[in-house]
Length: 305
Image: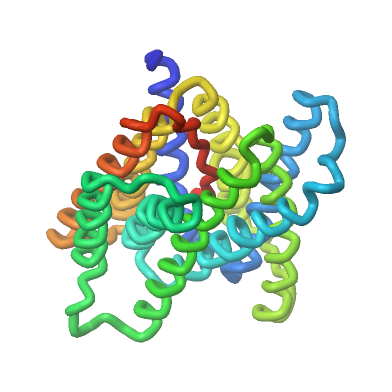
């Protein structure tokens, strides 16, 4: 892989890692679902103009509406909503670790639904990731509160939905422009998320506070728009395993910046759990592209995160 592309992937993981503590701060100014809806909607608009300029088409084909809507529900409405709502209940460093357990769900569901091979090394990677997740969550703590438990369950549901969305993307949109797919699913999913926010939060809220505007701008431009554009551009040049393995750095950055920005404590269990999750993701991703002569490169749509 060219050094320029390596640096671009590291930049994306940095963008997404920093996002987690910023979500926690943003929740002080905006209800989480409204925050998520605005962030994804504005990000989709930024990507839309990019896609139109690149493809010369102002909209997608009519027959793709249903599949794009379903992908948007899984990827943006459910996963994105779970990310923002869960982050309001759980520490941001732990949020990044739990959410990025999604590659294990993706691999397992690809085995069940797409009949892909599942090697013993991949199974080992998933078991390591599960053990790491348990260590990071530390469920035996006596002071684990009800809201924290609820937040962890919500985040796990988001990770499952992300894995299912990735499987559906792979099965339904093999020949599609992945940046265009990301744009339209994010647009549709964010519109539904606006409706959910209106029902649950008593309306769609927005804040003109400078800090809130700064965080919304960052998560719109760098996390949702530029991050996806860079990742998907680089992924078209290499096998999926060569690029997606870098994504395990997102929770590393997430935990690090949550400690630096929010002062969250780096416990030994959290660090050990993070290491095992990262190792498991590396094993799963590396083995996903080895030993399969008919394997087609996988491009995974990510939320930011």
